[in-house]
Amino acid sequence: MELLVLLALVFLGLSVLIRRRGCHTGVRRAGALAPAALVIQNIVDPAAAQCMLIENADHFSNRPAPPFLVALEKSNGGQRGDGLTSVPYGPLWSALRRNLMAEALHPSRLGHIAPLQREATQGLIAALGKELPVVSVREHLSAAVFSVVARLCFGDDIDEGYLRAMRCGIRDIQLIAVVEAKPSSGSMMAKLTGDDELVLLVLEFRGAGAGTVAACLEWTLPHVVNDQEVQEKLSDEVQSAGGTVVSSSRSLIHGMPYLNAVVLESLRMHPTVPFIQRHVHADAAGFLGVGGTTSDLLMQVSVGAIGRYTKTWTDPDEFRPERFLPGGEAEDVGPLPGPKEIRMVPFGTGHRFCPGVGLAMMNIKCFLAALVHEFHWKPPTVGCAGVDVTELNTFVKGMKTPLSVRLTRRTLSS
Image 1 (cartoon, rainbow, N blue to C red):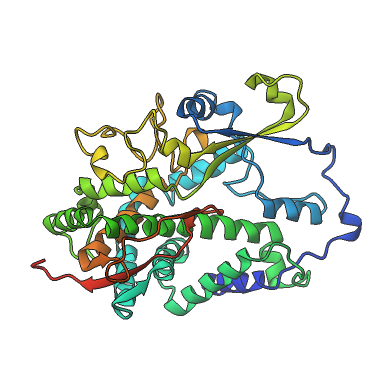
Image 2: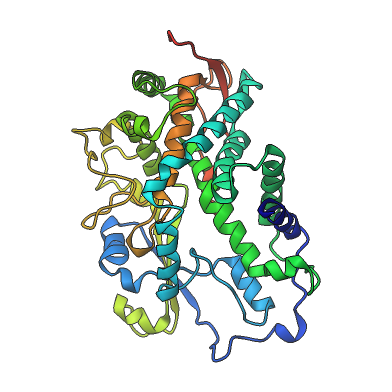
């Protein structure tokens, strides 16, 4: 039943539009004031980010509302729902966060997703193998990661047909900025969900759950292609650890320090979320030393700039996983910063760090280990200098040119 409801919701999104305009257009929530003008403050210094996100986290824990939610609020009589990513910092946020961390994302549950990862990895390897030798990998990565997230949320009995339908539907929903039709007021769909809940399903389920992990994999693989020494070290470690193409369990993954270093170096250089944004109301601007302003502030931490800050990192534009190994300059640096220093923030920090960091890291490492164990990765054409790693800033930072590579299968003796 849940599968049918979910599938219906996905396809409903392709036709759901908001007609509640007219008298609703100029309506605001009771007591609400016209929004103040917004002043953007860009932050690229790790010390400033540390001061804001950790030392003064209570003052900097509200995120700006996503554009979709703002549009819904304006066309829905000032009413808007919130999910964990957009709800204001406070009791409701705390309750939602505790519930998520205590159940679905509790560390003790990560081991239970191994069968889902194994099946997704098998499917990914098979799909890539059908297109040898030159393969465009983006859609294959996205499909594999999506299958893990979808089955984790809705049960492992979702078949490939449902997965394809959900992926296509959700991708199309993301392209719809303004929706124009709504189910009849008495329909089952109208009772099950509103416009705001549907949009939150899309943003949180697709973006945070699957899109960022697939993007990280696509960013890591070009460095594996461009630096064959890194690739062979990684392949040797996976094989030495006793892993196979589909059996990189949680315990095996934790025993692969070079794999961890490669993933961290990729996240440092190519964080999948370009910015950490915090909204500060005008009446609190004085706390920041910004006096005499009637404007709200949008504090925008550049995650990429933090990860390549020249005073923090040696040769920050070089892909060098060894920096995260024992004896390296970042041997104690992980995906989340400690309380005293920020050097990279791919999953955020402070009160609103990404609650799915453990799941994301497990998925990235599992897929990467299997891909390097199974295939040799090389540039798409002979004599090609390397893969283009030009960035494209969108909601999730991706590669401007989708990754295309030449794959050959490895043998156990290689």
